[in-house]
Length: 96
Image (cartoon, rainbow, N blue to C red):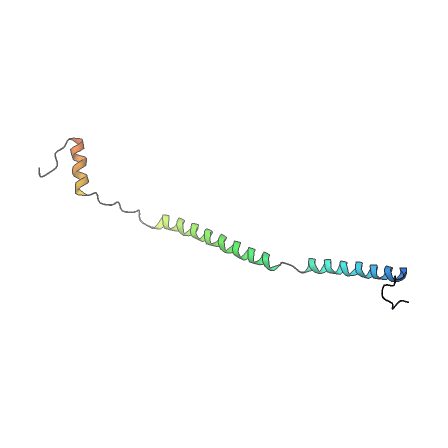
């Protein structure tokens, strides 16, 4: 009567199936642990490392430029502004 559909399996068969299921469940867990880094984590690490290197490199270049480049030249003041400033101070502009 074991081959019939809808037949209730014997207790020995149920115990054997339960044991086999428990063993396979343990194997699945072990395989997951030994799998290592998943692809999502690898992508995250690569992106984070790239960004970190970019910002550290920019900061290093900024410090190097501050030390080596000459200071910025100031824009020349226009004659109009000079004239206006001298008038404010009460000094007559040259040529008047």
